Amino acid sequence: MRLRNRSAYAFLAPYLLVFAAFWVWPIIDSFLISFQNTRVNPWTFNLSLNWGRLFGDPAFYNALQNTLIILIVQVPVMITLATVMAVLLNSPLLKARSIFRFAFFAPVVVGEVAYAAVFRLMFNVDFGIINKLIGTVGFAPVSWFAESHAAMVLIVIAVTWRWAGYNAIIILSGLQSIPEDVYEAATLDRVNRFQQFIHITLPLLKPIILFCVVLSVIGTMQLFTEPYLITNRGGPGGGTETLGLLLYRQAFQSTNFGYASAIAYTMAALAVAISLLNLWVGREPK
Image (cartoon, rainbow, N blue to C red; front, side, top):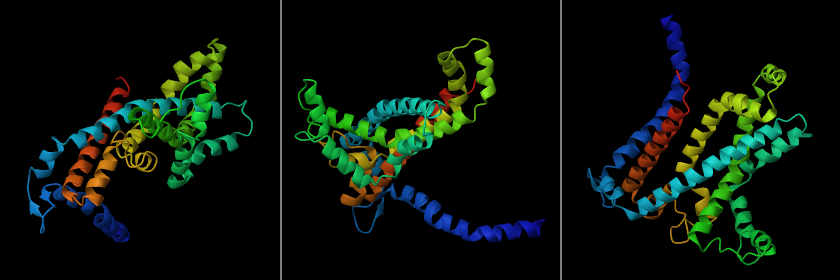
């Protein structure tokens, strides 16, 4: 038995070594870097420099506020929309369901630069199609890239468009695992479709929806692409700067790796805390 275990670990050893070298050690090293002053050469240990700055930095609180606003607004909207989309995709009345499923999932595989460029064109204040549509109903054009609130709405729309279909496919897999016998019994008891959705579908889908919420929370806490590419690096005036973008600026523009590491660990801690809170709220009663 021991020889068999040794053989198994021998086969696993190359993977474990690579995992330790390129995953475990960088995580530990970045934590150690967060306690160093990386603005001097050589780097020196300073226990409170980066963490002390973190809790008194207006730029950090601005990025944290923007990230939490996107999280609180965008994630519930996206999960609700994804659930509705999944129910529609699962309907036997829908023809060519495979085509629609691919269409809803397609935004995930679209190149980030390409889709950001399309959004910038669509929401252009002068010739964008969105402002043209707004003008047809009598409203003034919106300066999507010059007003902080409008830019934040644009980020929410972009992230929802990109990831709603992805979550819908995950929720759809949960829908398809629900036995039809449950619905047939409910129909015999004269329970209408809406009541079936509220009292049968949603409770049975709760673990899948919680999984999507946790993934969305983690993704939102490290949101970078949309504010960097669509709203021109977190503009206007930092109105859409997120924690991920702040980390990038500190690490690769200011080369302040110690402060960037402190931001990274704060992001990870917040993502874990919010995810655990969601799991606690959605736990099954004993």
